Picture 1 (tube, helix red, strand yellow):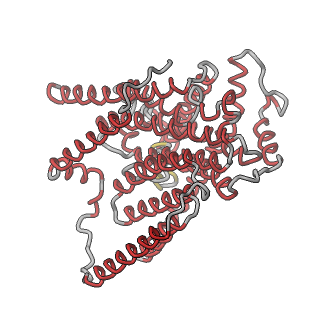
Picture 2 (spheres, each protein chain N blue to C red):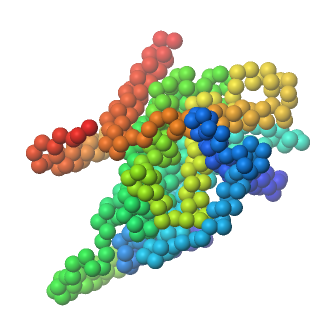
Picture 3 (cartoon, chains in turn red, cyan):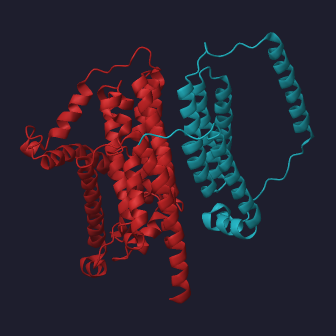
Length: 346
Length: 169
């Protein structure tokens, strides 16, 4: 029994890891296709049908490129930077519930690697750790543009973490739990948290854009001002790791947003499906629904990237400190008042 | 128990490296690892909430700021001011006296009985919240006022020199 559980968890970890990598890989392809679609172009179409093998070609190119470590760079930290970036990107998915409990051959399987009772805080911790990869890499490059990019990334992440935390507090006041599994279960059917926390979701989403360094918050790699930002000096697969980490972060933060606010694996009419499809098939449909939501969010990330121009640095700080934080605090107060009133009178 | 000794060894090793590292940025990076080992200590003690908060606040925020400042300063050996021989001597004597005091204090302590955890869920969020908002409500609120006053003080210091210049937006 012990060993069987362990093997199941191990398989789950490997599967989730593989899925995140594949999704990240095809996000690069999707990004270029979406950009092409929005700009009325064709996009990559040479490698395979519809350019479907383009990510493989890109990956092979990354591996083949010459690996350059600048002479004045601090060698060990130069390698630690991208490694840390991709590691922190990957470990965030450990607490996300990918589906309801599944029954296979008489055994009940949780489609979640681990259900720690501080799940949200774990995600929050991983997010705050993510900045180290960028900072260490930027500093170790011994290049002023890299350093400026790293410093921008750090100040941006710290600023937006605050409003992200405040927006989560309002959500926690309603759910009363920090466990992502319980939060997902509470949103059974159509009781999605976004219906009660629309403002909180908006703040969380803006912060997620900022935390993943996606446009319009991609100032750390603003090429008109900073060459390539924190990865100016990087080449080969180390650069690949940085770019890949961004896409994995996008995937994980989409999954977190879908789980916290958009019902996770829940969908209207899921009880009917569960009654008809049986305890093995129905959870799989739930997983498919979750992935549909995740892909919708990833598309939204790309859509915004090719629609809204990059912020200026003072605008970024203004939005973070003077707009989002007061809004998030107002959201907490409003949530408190309304939920107390509902408790009293309803 | 062996896990505890291993992690404790790592904590001490990395805190020593914080002191002995030549480069201040390396020093901060070792400090980050030291705080990470503290997080593991909290998990071993069954205090998940404290562990995660330590992780977020110390590793994720405060040390990022440390690193931030040190990267901006770009300290290195050449920039370090050389201290006179008397200051060094005073430092050695002061450190030696502190060592003697610490050794004396440790010699006086008796080995206490091992504490057995009464409640497994002692460190969970629910328990901590209940205790903080019932038993320790006053200290909790007072410490929040302390933090607020520190924040106001920081803002005051930052805007000390006359009115802040009009920013071009």
